[in-house]
Amino acid sequence: MKKIFISWMLLAGISSFAQEAGKAGELLKNEASTTEMKAPKSFSERNKTFEQPRSGNNPIPQGNRIKNPNYQWNRNYGYAEVFLRIPEQGFFTVEVGDQMMANGSGKYRFFDLSSGRMPISIYENGFLIYRTTLMLRNNNRMVLDFFSNEGLYLLDSYPVKGQYGFNDWNDVWNNPYGNHSGDGYNQGNVMDSNSFRQFFDMLMRNEKFDDGKIAMINQQMRTSMFTSAQIRDLVKAISFDNKKLALAKSMFRSCADKNNYFLVNDAFDFESSRRELMEYISKL
Image 1 (spheres, rainbow, N blue to C red):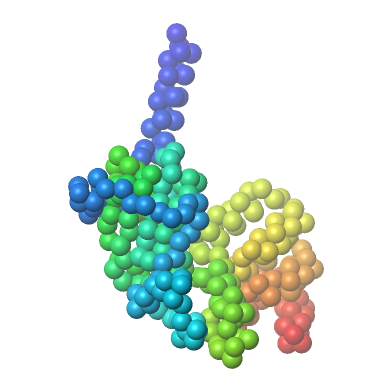
Image 2 (image 1 turned 120 degrees about the vertical axis):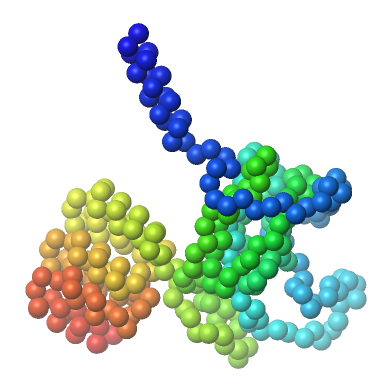
């Protein structure tokens, strides 16, 4: 009897910590009217991202395309992101501003959105089930959860650093035609503070020896960039100065703020290592 009671208490404790749908974040009001929700919307294609003509660009029938279109290189109208998760089974279509995405995976990521008031609409099997307006901020990512029985919840909104290297692609597109990127910001996917803290904690928890730590850091460098302060903390986590020095040299190429790389000097135990790092960087 005692074992049954203990098992019941354990299950009750686990369930109390489980995420309950619609209990996190700020609930956003559904602005879709009853009439709109009763009429299905037809979509020409499924399982792909649609990008309709932006405001000011009128669609041109395929048979009447003009021969000398006016090209617009590297349009700069702001940058914001919206990440939406729908954990329910089903096929949903999400429309944010002039972008539309439909899939059954439950994850919808929208990039290159303009800042300001932006409508978002959610459809299930072609029927509108939710609509509201988001207030997007430039260089910010908005993270949301949607539950058909609860509504749309705003979980977080935080600054985006690096914009996933999109400016690299803009350079490839524009440079052959004599155009250049607008702001020159080209820092790749820099780890934000929360992601770095999670990565650092996992590194210290899972890897006890220098070689394992360095291997894990090298793997992360393939997809992420770091700030000088983050690199300092990673180098400081290594035990031996010769390995610290090798890591600090290799991470210089993945540093987003190379002008602050002097911060990494604090990670070394010996002055000779600091001098060698500075000499190495000065020759690059």
